[in-house]
Image (cartoon, rainbow, N blue to C red; front, side, top):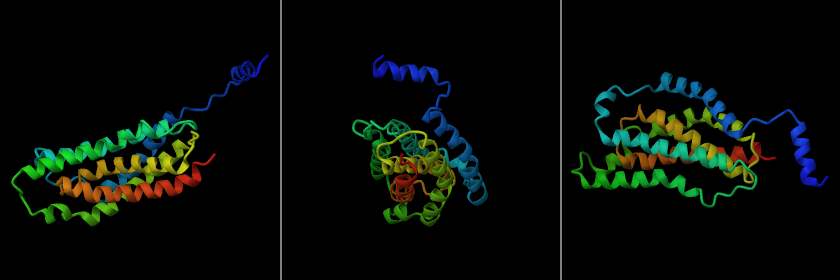
Length: 212
């Protein structure tokens, strides 16, 4: 019996099968989500004018941007959970929210400005944004890191950073329903800074907990 046959025989004789990373990651995020939702409901909540805000395309744009970050980040993180996987050929998925923001900023620039650029950029909720998104992201980040521990990423720091993108994207989706600043400039600035903070935390923690 050659080596390959021996490995197949041993695998066939072993009744235990490790759970798939995708299943564990999904379950971990579902377990962590109620805590993030509790933080949202307790300290933030849905904005009072949400029904009228839904008629503003830039309000809807915020959800498109945050979900276009979270979903591709999940896909790429699952790809990189394999030890032989590389980011090459997959990284472009993470540019989807950048493209959406560029289109939205260009669209807003073509309209008659409702408020000065400085006000659109700084908004009214920049400080809240920088606290809310990381606070709601931390439980999700813990869940994402737990899920990715069931894989074997060749770059633990990169995998941790992607876990940060996943959690920040999901947390930002929650926060978008509270935030009254709908300008794409505000989203591109403050949502990005908050996401970068969570991503850095994910990379730092992932470099330790995702080693194998």
